[in-house]
Length: 336
Image (cartoon, rainbow, N blue to C red; front, side):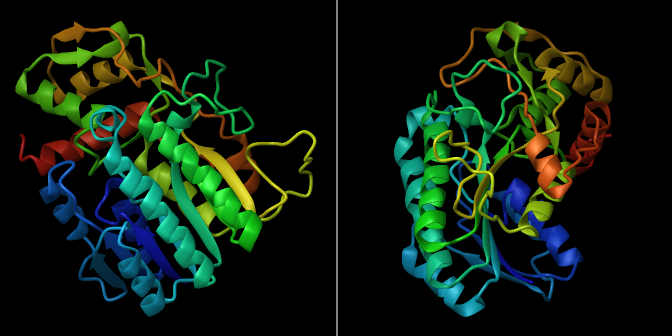
């Protein structure tokens, strides 16, 4: 298939692109290479497949509607995966405009391009952050998500609402995937796994928020990519069981779906740090601090809907995943 992927220099986007190329799809990638974190890591990810004969790369911002439309006009994608976004919960408190431009304006441009160029299916990244102040665990897609606690989360919930509107008005099949704490080789340096690895390897103390009482549904990158591909290959359909008098937030009488994509195995943050220490052969001082604004205490994905509909089955244990991540980290940074 011809698949347009946004965010191909990003963590999930690069890993997904490699898998799509390996199965002989043709991929058109868009990324703006912004400096939210070290662009050299983005360039290194991209270098793994940038010369592949079935890959085309465009350096552009999704907020540039002309560039987005020209990409669709040139490539004529059958399916689209939108992973480009301004990420980060804490940064959204400092620079909300970046989230408006990327996650709202940029996503609208993707929806419009999919509509006018008759895309067969749009899969897009949402986030576990949409569950916000919810405390019922595990988080399920039929739970209400009306109380976001960060601007980032609000922008991702807005994406789901916008996607539903396009599915309803124009029959565009859309599927939103709520990612739960993705980690693994080539991961983002602003996320806790890379931050912890940096500090542990340097013997520097680490900040542990919520006094170490956080738990997270850490999900290994290979499991995430497998779930994205399975979803991409199953375009959303109207839910025949949808009841407008008792609406299910995860489906619709339009071709619209939202799924959790996680490991369904929450891990205490202190246990994750312990595994990092074991694999790096070092211990670290832990500075226990209060919970930060915008954070949530726990995440846990109910992935039963994704299991049912596409056969999603995460298989990487936290022990194996941390081992693989640290092995890559040592190699990438030239550590013995």
